[in-house]
Length: 179
Ligand SMILES: Cc1cc2nc3c(=O)[nH]c(=O)nc-3n(C[C@H](O)[C@H](O)[C@H](O)COP(=O)(O)O)c2cc1C
Image 1 (cartoon, helix red, strand yellow):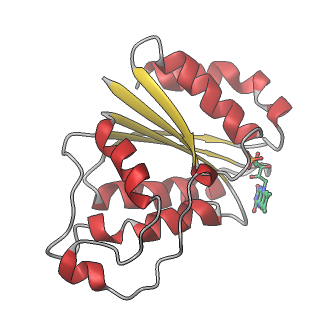
Image 2 (image 1 turned 45 degrees about the vertical axis):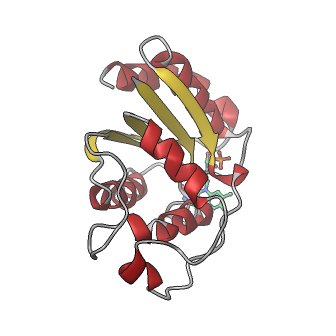
């Protein structure tokens, strides 16, 4: 079984990356894991042209197919997103917009294989859980339209930098036990 863990932040060595590493290490005991960072890919913005509503394909040629191939290969997908202005980072939102060819609200649409299980982790510097919940909702909304079953989520508050993650390691590992 394959698990894909996505760093939805553009920062490759920050708090989100640290959480991704902990999840990868933990899941690698039971899964064939792969971690990616959204910023490693060349993604243009969706132009809203709706060509994909008729063709199930995007008119632009960039790395969107590479990421969707990673999604297709995975049985389990874990998206780890920090709060940027109380929402998912723009890079991850731009990616989601580009998944419109795969969205089930129009026919024809492209599809990834059925039966995938999705998990979401949100982190933020502030103390309240409401922002984490908003981020989790955005990710779960996206999962739903790709028929990725939402199986669980974790919100982590009061995290700004990589060093703030270590004291939360047990929380993250116990979340992983249910994946
Ligand atoms: C552009 C930007 C906007 C942010 N906006 C918020 C915010 O609205 N609320 C919050 O609690 N934290 C906010 N943060 C803090 C991040 O959520 C936090 O530092 C997180 O650990 C960043 O992870 P990263 O370094 O892996 O991207 C923001 C950080 C950045 C860089």
